[in-house]
Image (cartoon, rainbow, N blue to C red):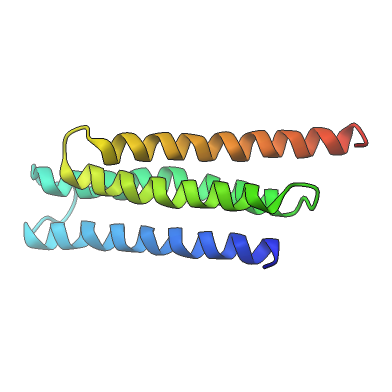
Length: 135
């Protein structure tokens, strides 16, 4: 599998996740006849936050993953590790937010998302510095 195909796989899944979460916001608003905002309904607030939180983290991670894929010196497992942790983290976090209080889904999702950012950030720094230093 080519590096760009790996990124396409994780980008596709995460974009579809954003679509599902956006649909859940629409459904919550239709159920409670809300035109804008959450209408004071806790379930609608959770749906909005699940979508917004995913929309805050997924784009930057995908851009970073794409840039990582351009460096042939980095191992392919790094792309998969970052892609899997992003995807699993965002799914867990979304389920956790829909459940309400702080729970395993929210906590596990946050940890995996931060791990994703650490993997991507460190990988990009390593690749960039290695190139600059002629390694």
